[in-house]
Image (cartoon, rainbow, N blue to C red):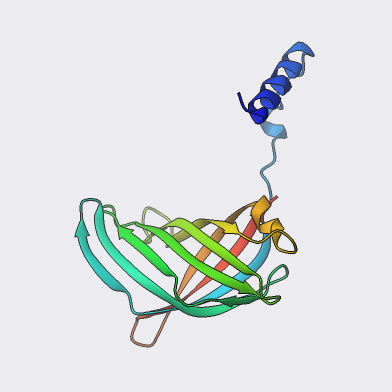
Length: 173
């Protein structure tokens, strides 16, 4: 067993032997999200990869962008991509993989995996993702030590072409 497994088992055994009752459902409060920063990501023209066994593929290159917010400022570096797979149900699996550079020149890797669905079934368009950051230890190490969620809003030009996305990142305390 790992050290974490031992700690979890010990905690569970302690609550059983002390008679501690689990919290009632009404006592459980969901965590509030904390806004940490926004990215405005500039995109290449989407490039269809064609149909595959799990849906239609699409690649959208990342050409740059800006980062602003209370906990991080900087820029999105060119060279990453958003890999998409549109499923039979009309929803799209998203995997974005790219780098950002903080104002202090720290290089941070971002892998943002999510889901986008068109409006329907009583709800509007939906686009959310779970980013995982790999930041150098130091000033930006907080990115390595929290769970985050992001929202994704498309920005289209006058002809209806996707040219940018706005992502807002929230920490789950």
